[in-house]
Length: 78
Image: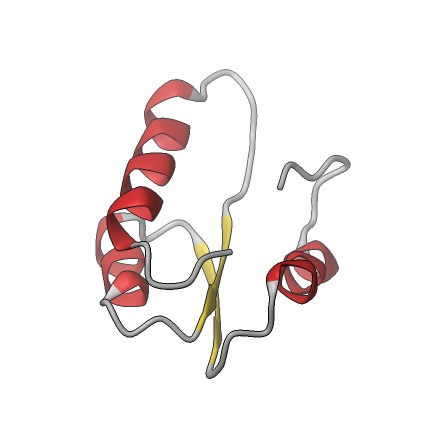
């Protein structure tokens, strides 16, 4: 989950995809109403990521809960 930190989101997701191997995993990105193009960047550069796009900043805990609700794995890393 993030709000207006496009470059940090990019670096984080790039690291996850570059460094994770040998396991199946899913990435769920919750955007809290960013206006910096974060959603479009994730959609374009990380097409396998599931995106939850909030119209407003719902806060850290609510955004975490949104991702957890749709996660399919046994474990969740926030």
